[in-house]
Amino acid sequence: MKKYLQKILVLLTVVCFCTGCSRRPVKYQKTDTAMGTIVSQTIYMTGDAEAAEEVTAQVRVCIEELEQKYLSWRLESSEIYKINASAGNGQSMELSGLMTEVFDQCNKVYEASGGAFDFSMGSVARLWNIDSAAVHAESFVLPTQQQLTQALDLVGAENSGLDSSQITLPRGIQLDLGAVGKGIALDKVESVLQEHETVNGAVISVGGSVVTYGSKPDGSLWNVGIVDPFDTLRNIGILSLPGGCSVSTSGDYERYVEVDGVRYHHILDPATGRPADSGVKSVTILYSTEQEAKGLLSDALSTACFVLGVEDGLRLAESFGAEALFVDAQGEIYMTDGMSQFFCLSNAVK
Ligand code: AMP
Ligand code: MG
Image (cartoon, rainbow, N blue to C red; front, side):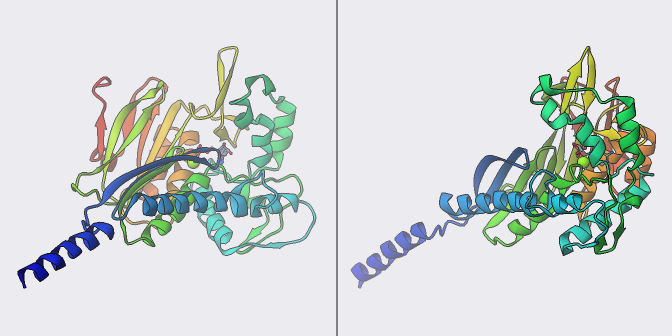
């Protein structure tokens, strides 16, 4: 009888080992590129490395599909490409459910920001072409004032022919969702994580946008660094966040080209058609409480606040129930009271 019990015990131990019965979540990390930027995933989950590989691959595929099917103005396969190609043909296009929702949220930020965030800036953004100039500086050609005035003439989301789930894009207008793509991606990524019961917690970043999910095994908070816009190799500080937060940063250091000591960056002021010059170096927006489309909104708001500058930007963020942190051109930091509860200044900056 004793021998029999011993055998059962050994068998149980083997089964537990093989099925990962030790239910303590293990940390997995993965870094890829997608949406033209770095996607970095830290996931705590039960299950083996193969299961973790499967989850991180699903996250990456979700981001790639969003880009290919909906958001990329470069890829012929995307909905935004097809909308842009339809400009001026007089025919209305039926929007997918996802794009209807996206434009709905974008319109809210467009209106509340007085047009500082404007998804109809495509033609102006193409003139600057900062994305490729940031990689190949020699390809950069400064747009002329005449070109900018001409392109700006058509800019204005209210002129884009949007009507709920339909759009009839007029000639000359090109849409650009570059300011919200990463945030939209993180909203979708959160749904992917929710489908996996084995995932206990995660922090995932797509470029300057981050989502925190669930919790760590030791119960400590998620640390999200805020890049020092004057020295991008270090952080000005850290946000210590619970799960369910969405953080997005827009900065003049992300994509730019420098000519004769002047920095031309990728965040454009729709009022001038030129890189925004509001005295701000970077803006971080945080949603720490439940909020529909929080990834998209934090991304849209960080761009809008960068264009608006500290005073108007703080007002805009607060009107959306978001927290904000600004670093201005003098290195001064301004933030909402709510943000200060999560923010800790880096030692070297104190
Ligand atoms: P972000 O890095 O999220 O601030 O987004 C910047 C990107 O959004 C740029 O690369 C452009 O594609 C686009 N963009 C630039 N200026 C604006 C603006 N004022 N409103 C909306 N989109 C913009
Ligand atoms: Mg943005």
